Image (tube, rainbow, N blue to C red; front, side, top):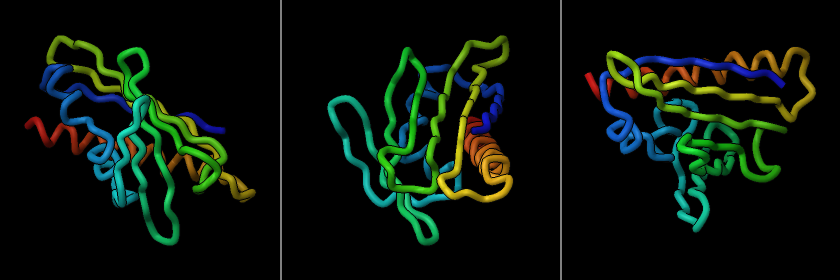
Length: 135
């Protein structure tokens, strides 16, 4: 398993950013998957994300003021994937930190390293889209 972290200060309040950071928008902004369906549950929002040759359910929850999401169930490319999005006041806006750990379900040489590299790109695209939305 590998972990990646990216962060950026965005010129917006935590409340404004929280409103923008809804589950389907997060999936779209990461840029690897399309949103096929969204299911609101009592304790979570599940987004069915699809891409080339695969679909996976992503379960989004609020945990201690952070957005937490993970691949739900055994369906998907990961044996483990979880992501935390945390917002923190900064002098010139709000610091948005995205931390994700990932492990592929396929036994490929350097598979976790490749998955982490791709995951870091996805998290960076999310932060770029978020910053662009508030420019």
